[in-house]
Image (cartoon, rainbow, N blue to C red; front, side, top):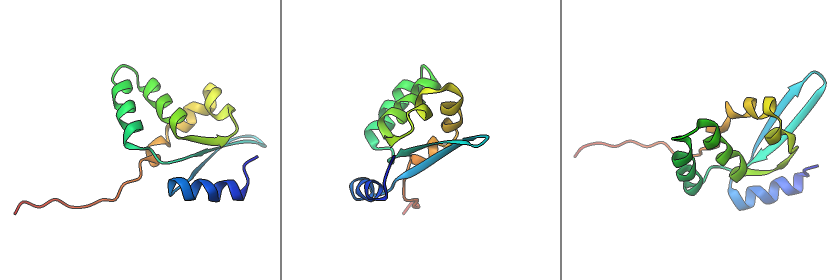
Length: 99
């Protein structure tokens, strides 16, 4: 069980924390994730060239903070999570202009 204190500690370490919740009837599973780092993004890019699922696994494993391990291990739960992994890429948008 992840506590509020643990979440606050993660926020202090990583800036942001993301919570993913999967539902099946009355049952729910939760996973907590930190933002994607440049190193994880690079590993994802290299791995996903041969397999998108393998690339997603790089993100899931390296950004995982805690929660129900089944989120990562059970195929149906991890397939649902894959749709949301892009939200872990935290960036500030800007503009580029030719001078």
